[in-house]
Length: 335
Ligand SMILES: [Zn+2]
Picture 1 (cartoon, rainbow, N blue to C red):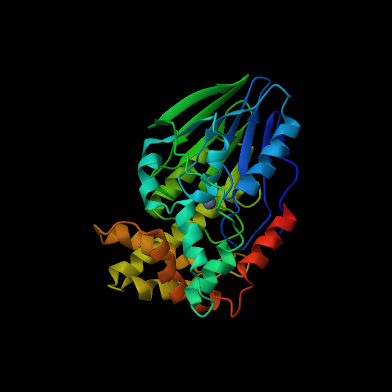
Picture 2: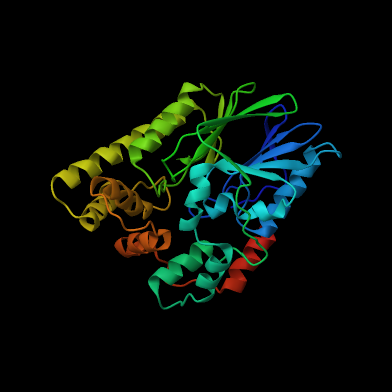
């Protein structure tokens, strides 16, 4: 587990912040597009302390006169947007659908309250503490997008062209990817997970595959996933194959009349891979696809869906968890 002190330059003037934190939730990648006059940041971290660490690293690569004047959120999940409030003077850009989807997201204070109430004798609470207990959400302020669009929005950062391309619904209702055509870079957000089983909340999974195809159509040299290390197009193709296979299996089980919980249990058995963490997310993927196969008017409730997934995969719950103070101190020592 490692949180970088410095950004990695992935193309001239393009820098990535890539926490190496597999097998858990919340540590997302961020990408900085720098210029002499200002900078654009794609996604903001999950806590104030992480955002401050990223900002300090960003200012070490930016000219003294430049500041982060634009923030882009690839989607509305908190691990890509909770840090927005630490950029009070920046324009915050995302899609119309991402702004609308914010109502399905817990606010930082709600997540803080939920974790404060977690009891170590409850399996789901232990799961939440193990994966989210290290994060301190207290100094965050919700800062929704101040500028939204549908389709595509083209921007200029110094001499660098930046294309924001809406690819949702896929991971969430309004995902966007960021294409830097001068550099052959695509920032994928959470339509692409590397190193852990992916989680997709909105779907359908065909939307995730289509979003990945849009990435391939741009023929990038480097792809920054939402989580995990940088990859090339071969890895994106492998991921598409994996999602396609899961989707076909879920459709077959649905056609056979299997209920969602039985289908999820079977997938947890069939598709568990030792090289990928967080296999319980297979149950979330099943639930997501079933919502499209058997349409429901129930609102999307992320914490409830995760709770059901954890119940179906009891071996993902640790027997004991350290206290929140210990978990937060551990994270702080890495920043
Ligand atoms: Zn994420």
